[in-house]
Image 1: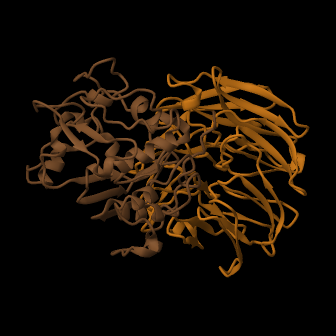
Image 2: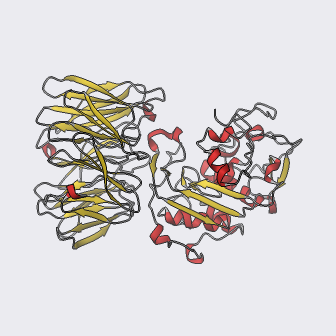
Image 3: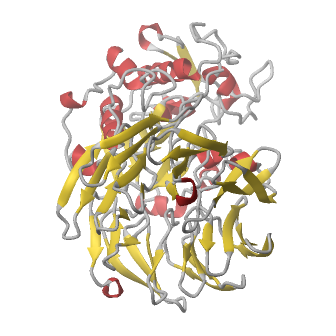
Length: 334
Length: 267
């Protein structure tokens, strides 16, 4: 789910439905795009625009007030145009950045949908790009045959620079799971990137100012979900082994909590007090404290496969595959 | 390779918990690896009623004919060539590697364990069966043409009495781990069962969010023919949802959309 400054909540689903809700839960509008939607949409920070892209390779800007289509583009590709990566509003370029299985990151002009730039996105890209504030760069990951998995800096002028290359595992770069987006900690000037190998992973910290790798932390399990940044700079990583790891800002593994889940597909979210919330495939909202204590905060009858998020009103929104969004006014009581 | 063994431990390699299974089944279950002739003196030659489109007959382990009842127990998942895997596509494992496997040379080989890419996907090689069992009407290299038709020729030769589709925890976009990051896991939390494989698979396709009567070369059958529609036209069952009756959860209540399989790049 994503929100605009007026507190409206927007949700897109695998049936291709896109809906807007008022803070009181009243549905404001509903529309449909071609193909289901796996990628989390993006909202323009100052204009009434919601950006959505689908498994059919259709990108749209919708009016947040009415749901009316402002522009629509079919993504160019020779193969499968599906968009799995979450969308990014790249403020520095006034563009929405996404990647499709066509193998390119695309920066579409936020006002018109015209493709401003494209960058190589590697094999079957599923990882979103990330940027911070009004910065002039964004960061992405891509798997490139014979090279490995690369952390790339992409500029608002269309340039790119490879910051780090991680050798692929024994199955090759094409088989690497590249799904988690980079995470930026603007306060510490660090970009975090996840590199999965055959079964395990490495979390790498890249110093933006120093232009070098600060540290790399080995993780026991591969990670598909984008990590969550805690207020103290710690990172929370739900993994494909069904646990949640916490890594301190200096790269030390703080804890790994086995949550009893088969795996985690989607990321979680931290509240201001450092409590971490993540949904699991068995329909449990797992809550992990700052010290690594876990509990099940809520159970639904079907799986959670999307990231929870806090709305501007401080409430926790948890989309579920049972077609409901659970909203918790006081998340800590969940 | 976990299925090298001809004994029950071959199944453990795939994660089957045999002790639990046997306990539930009151120790009456027997596991047979049908990748070759097994303990039998010869194979069974099973004709395809009506002649078949790509296969006139199948030469298989006798376990498939020395039985009163056939049950197809399968995962529900996406499949690049077949669109979806259900009770019908599950039959692709019936032809033994010893006669149809990719690792065969000129002769049958009881030690073979290969898949069936060359014989039943690309159709560049003929199986090493005792008679010429294929019609030769396959299209070389066109998985989307060949695989759906072989599925139907298998379904015609091996009628199923029960289909049980495990959609509890599975994969989407493609059929196996070997497709790397093009596959992702998903958890619908469902079991689907029925007496007719075409009807059951059609309901399963609808639960996945697809039209089970979708035209060829459209999702979910984006790389080829709709084998459910082919099976209906062969008189094997019904794939049009409006003609089907379901019990338990409604299709709408059960619906759990899958990411469709990817469009294969031409050439």
